[in-house]
Image 1 (cartoon, rainbow over the protein chains, first blue to last red):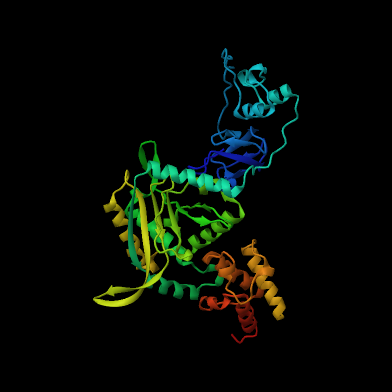
Image 2: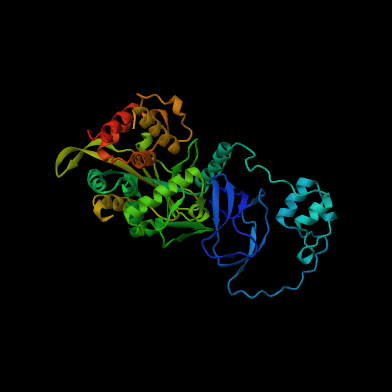
Length: 363
Length: 84
């Protein structure tokens, strides 16, 4: 069961999309799981042949649980010697252990028939004289309540563990908006760009200049990422938020980024996000301007080390070449991890975002 | 296409974007965004949906004319008649 975010501790297998004996290659969807973030398609990261499914649809298992065994391409299996049972210790799979608890079976009283005498699901079912437990509805408590609970846990961990610092700057977006109007006038309706895509691309490119903001915290140090996978905060209908990744956002044209962003929003709201989209973000961008918010004080989403926020566009007096004029301004904010960067680097990053938005045609 | 057919098309496209919205409860003279939780992506999808359903070109500058159900119907009737 993949970990699709710092706030995820378990998931429910909804369905297998492959069967034993099927060949799979990296990137294939092999299963669908349900998490607090919705129904997610699980991708495979190796190529090979599926040998065995270890978890049945309907089962809720902790993250890290092995769902299936896949024999990788070129792998020559060597049968390990059967491990002798350790006296006093019961060898039992997590699934069988969970089933035992549900059926009221003491694993110590069951003779295991699996490898090395391990107790299998079938052993437990046999001991209980029970048929396989029917798939239970994944939603055992209100989805919204669970999502709030998991978001709360992740944010509490973030504020507890990450020494945040906050910076903000006002950016004149007149050139960006004028360029966008002209550009969209040339594009067919289905290819038009949203202003938010300019912000995402500007952030992605600015990270090339301040790359230490792009990465994840692992153990006691930051692991910088060469790839820029921008997590975009997407509000869900009925409440809640997810922030799946736009992969390699710095390398995509604005047209491609827009198409992928549109697809991502559609799948986030209707179901069908991929596991890598939830696990890969290296930074998050959130925009609350459409909700009337002027300034966003973001909380970093662990294990990332920064989040960038954008507020609404407001017309304000602005000094241009010594004259006070009215300009559309947006407040960009950076919340960053002080273990990784300081305000100086953060300030350079926001300045880079500003500079990039003054030349929208080069984004 | 009649006015009622255009109205039904607008509500169908809106329903595809915001399934939680009850078409019967949409007030025709009140802004969609005041009645349904729509963001800029939803509005873009709304315009794309109208474009596909009615085969009409809607310039970005005309988006404000689509703010209400009545406004939508009036605008779409007009451009389908080539008088927008």
